[in-house]
Length: 225
Image 1 (cartoon, one colour):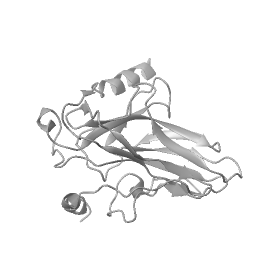
Image 2 (cartoon, rainbow, N blue to C red):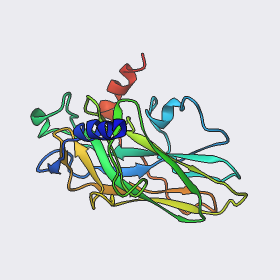
Image 3 (cartoon, rainbow, N blue to C red):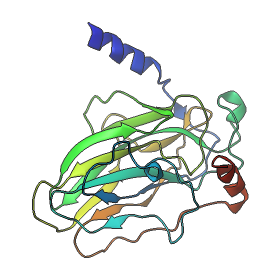
């Protein structure tokens, strides 16, 4: 009974979005990848928030080491400006994001999926098909810009193999889409895949440059003063 009540509460936090008529024109989804010999506890800050402006593009590749873990944050870029300072109907003509529904596909050398974790300020939603085939998270309060990650997936290499594992964003098995939920609480129909990630093997993935609007960088710097 307690588990049922928790499920109902979580589900009620997610108002079903509709396809957007305005919001972010073509937001792009990227995967970052960070390897750890031991899973950090607490998680290192840069997994959930870019406290400094990234240089050289997304960190989307790492060599694979036996029995190590990979942490894979979801990065949402190319958001319309200005980003809405609030949420709801007043955000219809502005950028930013509240959440995201997506799936993640691992191909190549097998690794073990461990978890899908919401970052601080975000809440995971229910998954009917199971994670990572259907992952969703949404903001608990504010509209967010590119420097915030709404969550990350974790994988474990339970072997001595170090070959290539490719990680790719795909449609959520529950929603049949991968779509940014904008700050008007609508799906951004123009959501695009910006980049995938690779763990191990000879690097073949291209780590994209982060689409950052320099005019917004002062806002993130002020958070860390």
